Amino acid sequence: MRIVSLLPAATDIVAELGRLEDLVGRTHECDWPAEVASVPVVTGEEIGAHLGSREISAAVGGSHQGSALYTVDTELLGRLAPDVVLTQDLCDVCAVSYAQVSAAVRVLESGPRVFSLEPRTLPEVLDSLRVVGEALGCADVAGRRIAGLRARLDTVRERVAGLPRPRVVAIEWLDPLWPAGHWVPEQIEAAGGTALLARPGEHTTPMSWQVVLDARPDVLLVLPCGFTPERTLAELDLLTGQPGWGDLPAVRDGAVWVLDGPAYFNRPGPRVVRGAEVLAFVLHGVEPPEPVTGAEARRIEGTAR
View 1 (cartoon, rainbow, N blue to C red):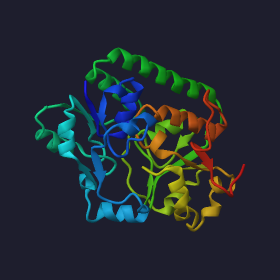
View 2 (cartoon, one colour):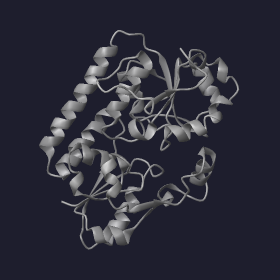
View 3 (cartoon, rainbow, N blue to C red):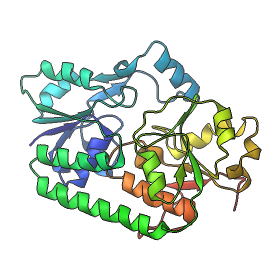
């Protein structure tokens, strides 16, 4: 079976199911696991990756709209002749849109099956493994993987049970400020925190800095969509320069963290479970079997417990 993944989370799922040998095409943003580096790239982006939060927001709200942010190499897609194309219909800004993929597939002679993943909650994220597993003919493997991921989540919940639940704000974009919704509130709750400013499954909207000040979070998580921790740190002055920054309980108590958003929080794939494990460490010092690294969670310099 020949698979093209047009969604980084779907590539993660293909890897989780042990089917990377069947992956013949991917997006330019698919970066895990390392083996996918040799897989042909069938997408590109219309705005530069070097742009900052302000410039990207302006491009999204200005001359580029949704799927126009990305391009699909239809000629290469045709040469790859996929049997299955995995895509999404959840966010046109985060990845190639379903409409764009459908248009590209219509001109192909191979007539691949297209599966769109649209999870909004943590259970739905795990259920995506079932959907892909059935599409790839490995439903039994998917079932075992889902059971293992659920067991890890249960372990996290058990280890934080009965501990004080800090009030947590998670920020998904820096300018404009945007709270992290969808499955992130559930990750926070599973890790022993109380999620503020967003409900499970919610597609959030921009907020003012005053909303953050009024929430007075005990912990502030910074995990911008698509930004590596290094890129986030380079733009952190968009937060630290805000009026009243030093008055936030999270800042005073040294509980401001930069996390790897693309790896564990922005993408609806199996690694969201690792994200919950990372959060249990951040919120309560609970170490998972595989210790949390500085690349996964970094306390902001100048704040310390």
